[in-house]
Length: 532
Ligand code: ATP
Ligand code: MG
Image (tube, rainbow, N blue to C red):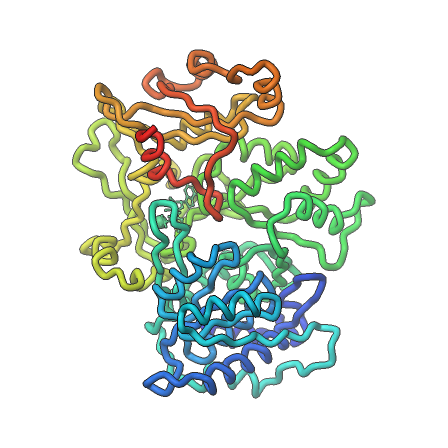
């Protein structure tokens, strides 16, 4: 179970009692303080729970807090007491929070002082009880640090089995309403340990600082690293933090961040922020970024030009990975060895991937749906037994809904979502992601989205929505004419794309509608554009 994993982590010699687990808001929290605080929450939950079973076993506990020690102790405390953690996003409007709380039958909502009033109201509307996560004491304070007996206490008050649910986490909602994904103690433990194998391969030791929320939280904690939270994503804040860690005199602060992970749009925004700096700041920023040890990217396709620009600026070849809420992370490029651009690397140890071609493969041999079997695989979609059943092959592989192929070196290439990124144009199957990558090389294009709109002759018409960069936008406004025509775009792209891949429809927009994860819901866009 997760408890065993966490106990092992706490006992590891490298995790000196006072070593820093979390840093946020300029405060440090040791592993000991985190455990003490989680045990308190566990006791609080157990004493409050009056469910029919008289125990917390399996009860859903909603947790809403900004990334902080309190958030982490809320999650750990829930697990220690046998409950199922349901993390809720602060960025969600009340209606969305209520949807998730009602959908997952949250019986208790945990939050922090700063959101007390709002969350008390939300809890009242959903008939969940409300409780405050007590503030976790920081390292400088005099509070107790855990001792061996405390570690032994973890998880003792419940009889949790590896197959028991531990977490309901909702998908990004890129293709529809977010689905609750149920992870068990075993699947989380497996993911944590596999990533830890990766982390130790990557020689992360306990002086490492990793920025991130969920994906980047448990495994680094298990590896004994320090996780630094930023209250929210801020381009200036990140560049500034890196410059603080690595001043221009070539030194390095004691709490310097060494590993960074983000989604592709974060890197796009960081590049835009960098471009807007004056030369001196640029030099300081780039030199600071160069000194981090590792930068990773995942959660949606990393366009090639973004990867290349990032490498030019920071010297870092982003380590791209492939993951889903349903199995967290299962294919990744290596730390040492070749990180192949345009691929997501190879399966983790213990992960099996197969490609299931559909009958109409025709000219696209070797291309098909990625199906994954992994110890980190989720148990089921919450309250969606039919969807769960349809998501697995007869031999127990999870059908990802993503189309991909393997290259000659065994590296996986994601061509996109079968339902949204794969277009069928006159008998050819095209990947929207490939075309997007090419269009982004155009000097005037900042962002783009390619999708197939129905075409009576060809099946799908390759349609491009582009967002001009700031300069092109200004020029467009001054001359009051579009920054480019379809003909101009195609004549620029014709050396880079086969004729049948060239867009036949062009839309110029001010921005793309992206969800919290930076993803575009193409199904929704398609509907909108067809209706227009
Ligand atoms: P929903 O399932 O609610 O529609 P979602 O699929 O976007 O939302 P996530 O679980 O966050 O929710 O995202 C997983 C998906 O993200 C994968 O199925 C895949 O399409 C995409 N993805 C993740 N990593 C990569 C990558 N490195 N390259 C390309 N696509 C990726
Ligand atoms: Mg999905």
